[in-house]
Length: 265
Image (cartoon, rainbow, N blue to C red; front, side):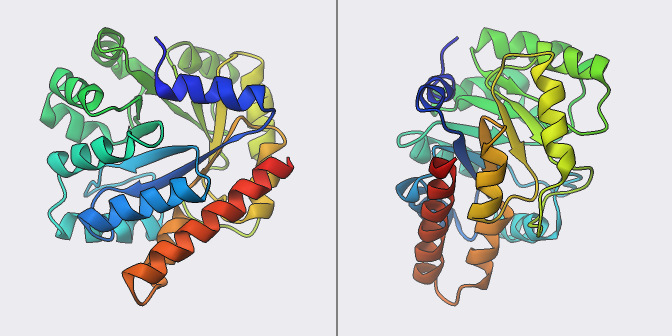
């Protein structure tokens, strides 16, 4: 398997830097607004994109992303809108979908993976799918040559890290701390320790998410991780802007600042 995401990590490793990964829920702040904001992120320097599939019970998401998902759901965002966004953004950057398991199951596992690949998707992040419940998913994702990206946390045991990473492809999503998404004033020291533990059991790229919001934090994480994931900081800019144009401009600027932080690393 060699998806655009796989090729990206080969590229950034050759450049001795981390990849910058940006996140937005599909349909936020509107269907076209999401596509415009993600395009601005890529123009600013984001290397890869996570498109969130908005869900009514987002156990991993903090208040900023939950509010954005609520807006998205009120806008009528569903599978069709997620795939439309994926089709647009995958033309300009490697793109994955982050979704809870219930929407995949409701959509149909094979149909979801077929449509995802048909719209240019490189992989799927499934934060609430456990390895024990992944049998059907692993077989289907292999069949559709789609990366399976699992989330691990500082509390994950060494034995379980080995088991989870053996079923993962694309990259490992390392949650920087126990808790939900959101911007924070500092990155937990547990993030570095978790990455070090992961290096003992896998050669896959490791991307750190949850809490990264400033160029300084991105620079810090890029010292030890292969990817830096930023979501809430972009969402907050869109939520606080008085016009769509202002939001797009601020998103592009933050992406550029974060990208410079990574390149300094």
